[in-house]
Length: 291
Image (cartoon, rainbow, N blue to C red; front, side, top):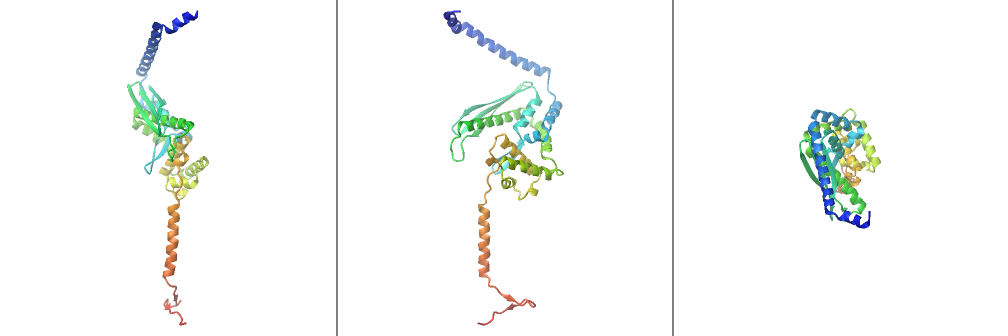
């Protein structure tokens, strides 16, 4: 083929038009095939629950990954994680999901998650935002923005999936995962030691771990506090939070000020109250000898 013929082929509007139309036909055929498959193989709620619970509780490590925790407004909120959303999406069937980063603004990165139930023809699109500046207001570098964008995409995807799949069903799966991950009163002593040790290996100091759940010692960690610690560990592992965000430094200034205040008060009281001598038998004050 000559160069002239090749040029004619590339610029021929009729051929370009055919290619575009062909792509549209293929896309339409693909969607119709998906809808047809969904009608021929409808999901069964009981089968979904059995499969999702089986995956979420396959072992303790997977069960722990199904939980997350995040500090909000002075409280720590726990709930189903991105990993549980992926498990539920896989078990639910006839569900198409996807996520992407829409934009990196001056202070935030914006991501979008989409979940489409082709069986019921229900589609949700959810956006999630994550800050890309540090506490001093300085913008992250490109690598950190990429990492933050991936985390925002995961959050957007999770929220979209949980909009489509009924939350009542998700809660059943989450409860079973929590049971395997946290344990019960019989296993509490062993589990809390394991979780705290693992968090310490991740880089969280013991005093920060205890302070996060308002515990003075390991024995003060109950089942709810253990759930929070497991969730925070999952959030750090999946890069949804930094270690310092999950386990912030403990402020010891108020304690030091209180200790100093107590010492000064004791010293002042000792000076204000004169020392007296009492009779050991009658407990009466013995007057000081005249000089």
